[in-house]
Image (cartoon, rainbow, N blue to C red; front, side, top):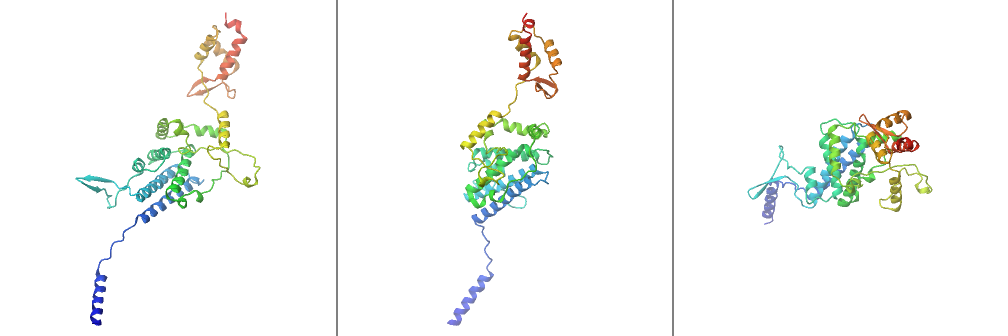
Length: 346
């Protein structure tokens, strides 16, 4: 009996040996982890390349890698919450999933991820990402020049948003802030460089059109949100606190009393677009104030005599070959008319 029992056991073992092993089933958490690791690696690579002073292909590389990073992040979220993010079509009463030529399932692209009703992102964050996505489509297969500094505020917001979303959805360990440091600069921007950054004439036509079209659809609240574009300014300041003495950057919390006072000061000194006057309008203005004899010819001789268009006097500006006068010149003309009042009021 013992021998028979041993024989039966051996037979069972043999049958198990020839049985085909079951295919390994990947669990949700393992797929999610792989997606998050790839997402995080893409985001870190995007920032490191953009901060590399020896890299000239910054913006193009950044937007491509960040689109990949955000796409994997959202795939991980949808996988975790059992949201079907594979493309499919309905055939009769059944769903048929769409596959690639190699047979793999086709997953949602970034635009589809953002459009989903289950998307967990803040609407302003989505706006920033739609800008990044649209920019990627415009620069893909096209050469661009000098857009790094112009768009860096929106790129910065994209990075901060990424860290905060990773932290809130998957935990602090998936964030990227603790792996990045402040990018050091060897020089500060001059006033001329700041003016150049705001001048978009050097941009490729398709990029300029895209930016202007996108921004024109934003409300003032959306445009000024730090989640859309993270704008900061730096200035040297005296440190009284020894604990702060060696910090390159001190971050002031948005909405704090210090931030409010700083923003109020900036609002006062911030240069605004100056009103511009054409000569005929200036003449009409003077005549409406009672100087009926002041004419376009008088105006011409006046600015010639004072050399009012000389660079540095600040009386006006030339835009695309046309000269425009500022309010300071209108005041100068009024002063002249008042001094010659009998002549111009006869």
